[in-house]
Image (tube, rainbow, N blue to C red; front, side, top):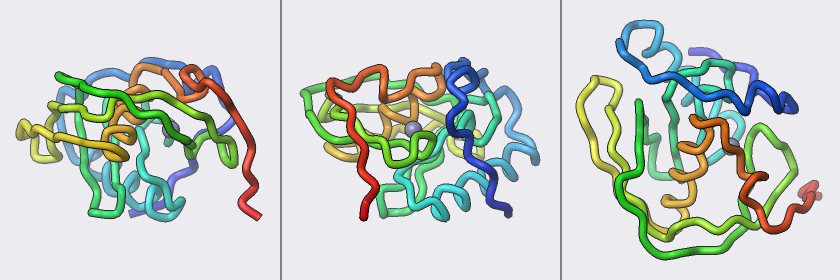
Length: 153
Ligand code: ZN
């Protein structure tokens, strides 16, 4: 496993659309392990493959209950609305107030290629939406009603 460099300040790359994964081979397994390690090292809640420079539809969400690995995910149901602060590993120290559904249902494949169904409420719903947006080149800044900087000092 290795910590990969997170793509930051590269608007052009972060805007690219990722391609579906057709074959979950050894390279994908290594990518997933590296993404988990990179996410934990950066202390984030989620990471998409585009953020480590790979345009594949893979993202990982971990809100402190262990990593959820999502390959070719799509949101099949959303309900409600929540307003809250959101950040991104690709935009260090920048936050925005983003409106998201308060509940989402996501279908994806796990790392063994088996279909999984994830239901997320509140912060998990927010993290799922944020990461899946990355796969379409959408970043939270696009959706934020207000942006601010927090150096965390
Ligand atoms: Zn992000």
